[in-house]
Picture 1 (cartoon, rainbow, N blue to C red):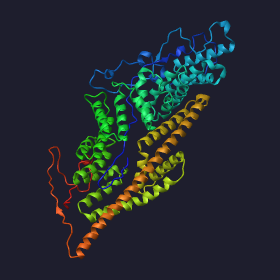
Picture 2 (cartoon, rainbow, N blue to C red; picture 1 turned 60 degrees about the horizontal axis):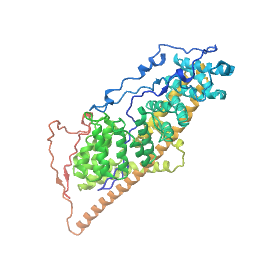
Picture 3 (cartoon, rainbow, N blue to C red; picture 1 turned 120 degrees about the vertical axis):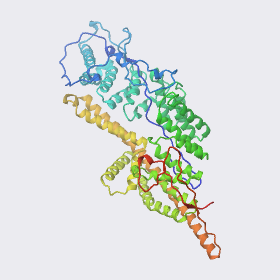
Picture 4 (cartoon, rainbow, N blue to C red; picture 1 turned 180 degrees about the horizontal axis):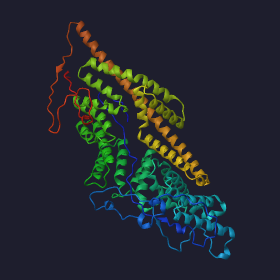
Length: 604
């Protein structure tokens, strides 16, 4: 959000598109494991070592029956109900297909006279792997499936083996590894026998991982594919978000328009539409859409309960009304943000400008007291000092205004120069990530580091997208460690080695994405500080000009000095509040309720 503000104008361009998605119930188009190959008497094989088993969880003991994986449709999904909740996610279930459907594309016949010894052995290996899946021996099953997948002679079994490896890895809670296989299947397009089932699984697993960009990238190749009904709206929303982040608003709207109005995805889709209208400067249209989102997320009457989405809509409404000069309406929406919200501090800061424009200096300065509380020592609001300087200047308190300008320049001039050195370095995105990671470790270990530098590094790393990537990297590291701790025979298998190699590749990809986000964030901070420094210098010039005019008037024997008048104030409060003098201490229950009384000021 650009915080470059003039004395009389304030423009905010910001958006909050949450990554959290409303969850939907999954019902299967998945093939039953029994049908991956026709039943045939097994050829005796040397047994693989059995997995060590302790007390099994319900999921690890054996695949749950279809009935257990397919809960009834929750009442909150029915459009006739006034109150809606998020539906419970269940993994795709395995639906039985008609017996006459061939097991594989180009399947072999089952006449014993037509089968060679090699084909019989391959068929037996496939049956054995499927049997192990049913018994919950997923490690052994993945080894056999991978052997089948790696053998070019088993081409007719490759698609089923690839698909079942993905499912087995999910059962082993190796979510990124599983998602990698499903993404590989989806990337091969609808011609792959398990394309639609893999789309279902991919969307389901994407709810369990922090980063779904790899899935979105391949889904975007097939925007006109008819997605499975149970996943259709969510697929369209994911694609709309993907296109939006690519600044392709036309493609994003195409996806949004395919989402049903009674879908749990609809409020999120409308919010995304509002953001696009706002960025296109269609403010009235954006206001109408954000108001619609507020209604759709009403806890009592709305389509869904999503407090975060509702507050995001309030925040956008506040910003638009401020931009339109409707400061009272702006404050109304800012005050809708809960103290427990991640947006609360941002709303306090932004509303300070609205209070200032309304002439409510006491509340504007009171909000800034909250922002300076030790509870928020890692928050980065350099513009707060500028607001103080502007308020005191507006009240003819020139010495105090000048001291705030000096404080700002002393604090942020050197920081700007340091940030500029970072920005102008020619580093790749992955090097940017490594740079900030090292700075984070260094500052965390060295308490002597400047507090302001700690704040700006925290600000860069707390970027919503950067946090998502960091969480994904943490999840991938844990998954790699988990694979490394598995039993030796599986840990050293080819399927495990490939899983680790794929995870390392995914890690490198996400590091580059995170580095790009951090580069953009630090560049934005640099540019904001440069503009704030310019604004501080303008305030300083205005102060010096006022002093010069005063001195010249005195030399001419004229007295144009400003008369500071006593400000009226009272300790009276609303019925639900108490008056309590601020003496430098902070209490959590007082945050956001401070009023700073200016005892003297001029009338302009």
